[in-house]
Image (cartoon, rainbow over all chains, first blue to last red):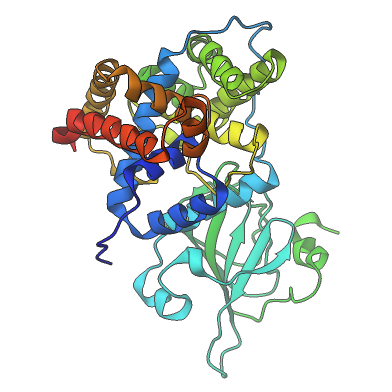
Length: 218
Length: 177
């Protein structure tokens, strides 16, 4: 998109300073989404903020440094969404798949399956018995399993997940049959977006409790 | 400072984090107080800002040289969230999607440090009237209209001083882009 008219520098600075009234900010945000030139100015304007912050007279602290959490806590739910959005933007949809789901993970119309889990079933031809879908799992959430019969293939598109076997990053494929019991968990920081396929129709059409049943052994 | 951030990101090094904390938390506290927080709230927000650095450092591990910039963006977003007066919000990125770790080439990482130093120098060379409006905008959190009221200036004058200040900063770092 070739843009001929940009946000005024003064307005952009006020936005970066965090001082621009909301209605104006909404327009700035929308413009920034399509304008690389203004985004690069935002970076320079952040540097101004950093310089001003460094120049402030320090205030004495009244208390000690808080303890650093030993283990990173799971992001709050709202942060999880923000992180997943970033992960979506970071992920590439490989060419062939993009014909089915579009080229941009952040524009996928996810359906919510349960807490921290979304999916997008992908239509297969009428004669297929299999099941193909995208799954998006919030940071630290247990990945649902199809549970089912036959081989299951999982390819990570963005973020990662880990199980007893190892950690799977974008491009990695887990090729498992139903003999293997494992408990995959989405990356504690980034969550995971993957493409998951099974030979047989997936069983999890009902409530989420049934969905995770193979994992919890309930 | 960038090295400290790396140590925090990669090694979860508490001593490195302590140095970052001691260097930045007192300034973030000042920032929050300027934005209208009382001392206790300002300190809590400063702690929260730095703990965010601790928690999210790994997401920024490759982004050298921008600890201060990153901390500024976190502090700004936190104060918008907690100290809002007019609900002036829409998402602002913390850190920079445009220069995300994977996009930064090694020599760009060096120039990031250089860029920061040049901005610092250019800021100290700004005329007093320009520095004043920039400070009121960034540090005191005033909108252009509020600055105009406070200084009894036409709105256009406030904006043109902001623009002039930015142009000087931009000239100082232009060749590094």
